Image (cartoon, rainbow, N blue to C red; front, top):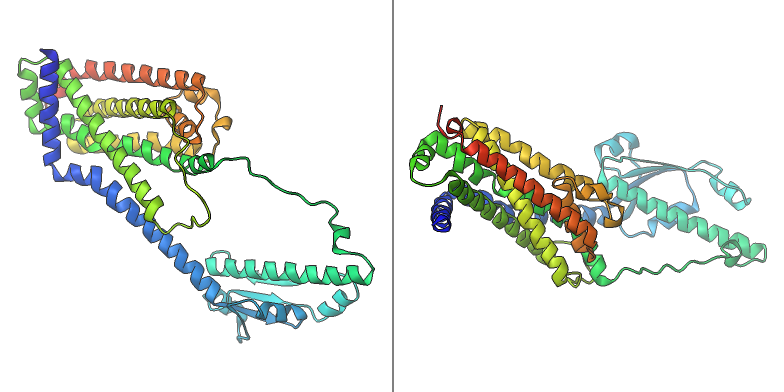
Length: 393
């Protein structure tokens, strides 16, 4: 009897949410359309800036040297002589200004060292690229001078470079792919799980309380725990669907986005039955944690608008651990993080995408998450049974 009641209420709540266009837009439109579109615009913008920066590099030179000839051979470099070079650099019509001392070549030819000054604008990405071009050209020009000096002294170039180093990357293709995804997926996954159920949780309690429909539902011959279970399942479904939509959007970005992946393979070989099981359990427990917390806040709220204010804290609670753990490799994550709420879910997700889940970490992380879910559900159930919490004041 109890299961049929929960299933009936669950179907009713889910159907009402799917009829709400705002819920559908927030759950599916933003992850599936907006996120890939933003990534596409960002990628296209950076690509265009880089192309423009390479195609035209206007530089002013104060002084003369053989270095100027070397710069002129670089594709896109144009040597200009504006009247007010510093103002032109600030305005962006110049990318850099090179100041060469009058005795520059004499010092170099005498076997000494010479200094030059390069002015650029670090707030202008095109100016930063111009500085990189100058830096590489100066390095190559200096290397040519060194080679000539060595030949004049009867030495080879190897005389100043007695040791050569060969670097070998031991990371497999699967590990490289997982490492790249581990920096993106946990953040989007956890934030989507937190944000995907916000609208539904707020509407299912605070919204119904404001409309007076929750009081009518509570007076029906249905146990409060059955109603709460159905609402919790509904919020979990919406948050999980939002997370799934975010994963699809990331897949679209990685597959069709303007990302430079030339020469780099991509593989999902880091997945195994064990890691997939850990990932699924992590997602379900995080979804239940956020759903229970959002229902608590929705129950406390006296109105739909007040509930919206409270829900912003849930998003913040999801973002902080995600950003803190984003740059870390799983081997550098402290063990106590696997006990902390949300932190443990993010840490386990990173281990999954790196292709190696520590059994102890999985046991601690999943066990702690299950404990938090139980505590939150008990708190929600206690609040839900209070008559004042579900009746509009």
